[in-house]
Image 1: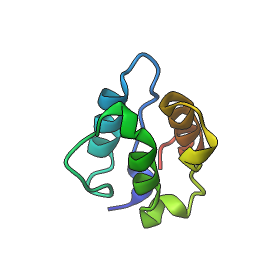
Image 2: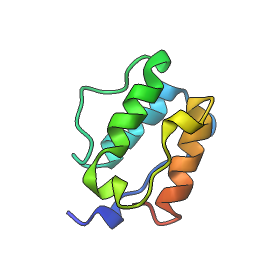
Image 3: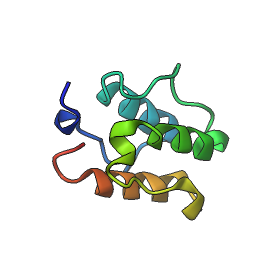
Image 4: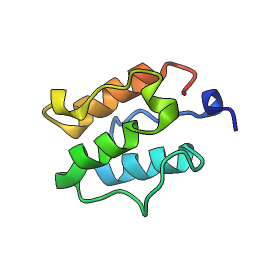
Length: 85
């Protein structure tokens, strides 16, 4: 699979659980796990998510630099670019 063919949905109007599950599904196996955790665990999930080798090459933002999952998710989508990752 070519990772540049993956589209990452913008989080606007979504709950963390819905957005994270959409990201998991859109990554077509690049992200492993049983689904989105509780929103209180978003930083841990985000840190694990960006450890994927294809994503670290893109310089994905560290969740430690954001106060909310939504702020991080917006930065994640921006880093992925308009064509996805």
